[in-house]
Image: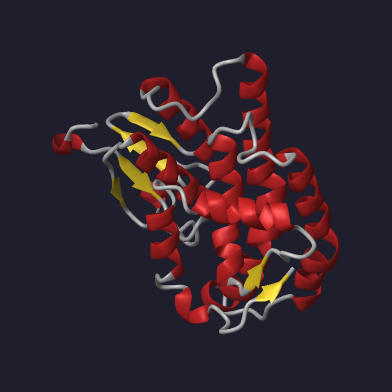
Length: 229
């Protein structure tokens, strides 16, 4: 566990699925840190100097600055190898990293995209939700994503070799935002995926973070009735 005298800093708002991804990994590895709750929108110049793309999260540990969630997790896995979040064998390790990438791109674009349109656009940007885009996500894009994730799961408990890994942390993160947008995975159409998301969110390193984020500042925007997608 890291020293409390000079805690590393995680810059980034907790509601971000990419910040959450790092928070869960830190909890899993038992690493102490502080958090600035930095938003990527209208970020101050001092943050942009740390994160040139003005994206979150950004990890600051002494003179080391890492402005990307995947790079942060790679660093944490190398510096704090126990407990591991990546398989030891080359093939499964590469598979976990691919699924992390898929989560950060396609899953984030679609699953968390619904949250961005329904919550972030009207609150942070004072703009109306693009309902046409939301319907595209829900009716066209997401079914393909959910089918692919179900195929990848293949009836196993977790995505890679039946063991909890970076892949599971990354994939499940966006589904917290999905819930805040009033949506859940249709248990009739994708029962394995729905159970999988619940199982990952119930992990000891994940459950307190999910609870805090679902009950946090954005909870007031969550529709009273959730919809199956």
